[in-house]
Length: 244
Image 1 (tube, one colour):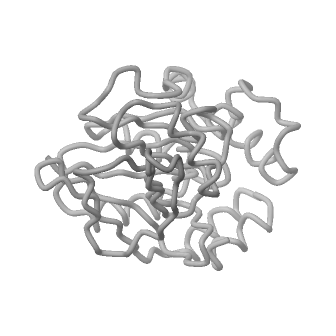
Image 2 (cartoon, rainbow, N blue to C red; image 1 turned 45 degrees about the horizontal axis):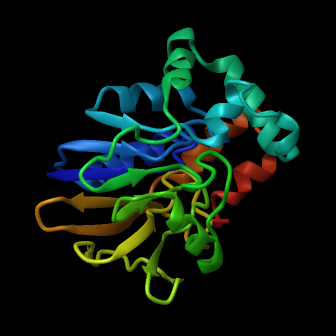
């Protein structure tokens, strides 16, 4: 089975469409949260995902739109975008966001799916091996897929030494996942933050037991024009050009 893994779409429909086209044939989609927030097309992104064979999780921006998180916890630009998004979403799509789980309720083919971290599924950022090491105690499956940081990375756990290491995911290079425990972040579709503005995603091949990361260019200017028309914050518009 080929599974398209996406995260942090952030209402960037142009990027999502490009990722889906670039991925080619796949059997299912796993979305690691933050479908909305920041970007100009929240309804269209939800509806695009709902048209596919999808498993999706809640992210912190999804919860912010639903008022399930205190917006004072967000920076002013993110807060303004969340309020705008809430005003745009249809009742049907708001209901869909409400129904998203914090984590996959059952073990799914030896994978745990989370937005933030296994310890705090919605909000914690896994940015260092030290934080990753603690979080390996909070899931039982061999592999945990996470989002939230917008940075592609794999953390490996060495149980005998009680330590974790961090490695960058290598574009177009299959990562063998049959042995050992790992936490893997595929990066962001709609707002990369690793200095590379191209959309990031991954393909999981459950037969070959590999996960392959990909990057793909999309029409950033077209997304920025949509954001300008919606009068979204200038900083959110500018950052797409730089991948930060």
